[in-house]
Length: 466
Image 1 (cartoon, one colour):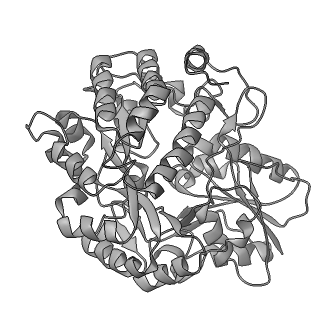
Image 2 (cartoon, helix red, strand yellow; image 1 turned 180 degrees about the vertical axis):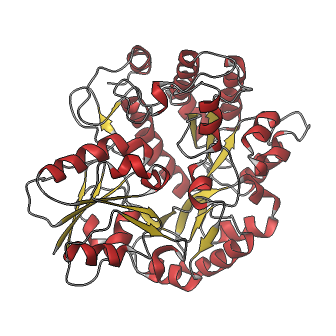
């Protein structure tokens, strides 16, 4: 039997499929390959950087689906099925919208695949695929080792992806992770993670955990075990980690360069509405600067923070979002993401906006031919959808301006603290700058085209971007 694994693209640029310069090895694909029983031939194609050979013989196509890639994933699935190849779809999106995904597949996997994948493959071998397989939460990866040989020659960034824990215990209203994992958190045995990291042959690691410090005691155990490995790593964390001095010290000692941290908003009222519990105290500290203590702790430890902001809560105004940009510039974060609040299916936010009649594009923006990447998909409370789209892109454009980049780099506490941190800054900041302008206004799927929007063209001209 031959199994073909597919990582879908987001969509199309002006006249071609978008090629992601910042692409990293898709760990979930490697995990599936590692879980596949011996004797099954495995092929992998990454739609983000190569053409999919639909006419190459295969017995089963397995496609991982996220909400942003759903339209493209369904196009790929339909192409395989038109050639008589059975298709199985899995991931967060099919779990949250099984009926939609099932209309493009012979089988879907809802939940974690580890516990059911061998059955899926066996059923495919014997021509008895079931319509739905339901995986239950358990130890991430099931103690298997991801196959990384399938990633060779695809031009990924020189960073290895590793997973320790999965899920998050917070109840943020907008988050698919909370909806998918039902606020649960599980993690692997530390010794398994150490063995995997030791075998990588790379010293730069990205821990893909949704929140690597979701359990402080478990995180400390991992960090202690990483210290002797002398690696450098980045991950994703939550604001409450800054209140645990031992955790922060161990994090840095273990080789952490920085984390993606969801600041989300500077408004404690908005944070309460979004149920972003770890941030409320810091944003409402009353010392004249939101997150003043938290940012000071991050800087004290020299961490290169990727600050993530959500734009479009019911408390947001254009002026408030502009102030949020000034906050990010003032603190000279290494990276920042100014993300429009998206109504993901299955989340409390989606149900709220649907009940209030505020969803655009018929509610299913991820399938709408007219929807554009990084555009608002709902009507905000205190501005129009167009205003939200515009101020979000203006924030990204200014953040990625040459003056902003030079100002942020000159921070002696973080970006100029060591030679390794300087190299990281100049390796990735220009790359993410290019990707920001490339993706703005892109359509989902390959079938739809379209020129870049007016604001993208204007920003490219102002910043000298080709």
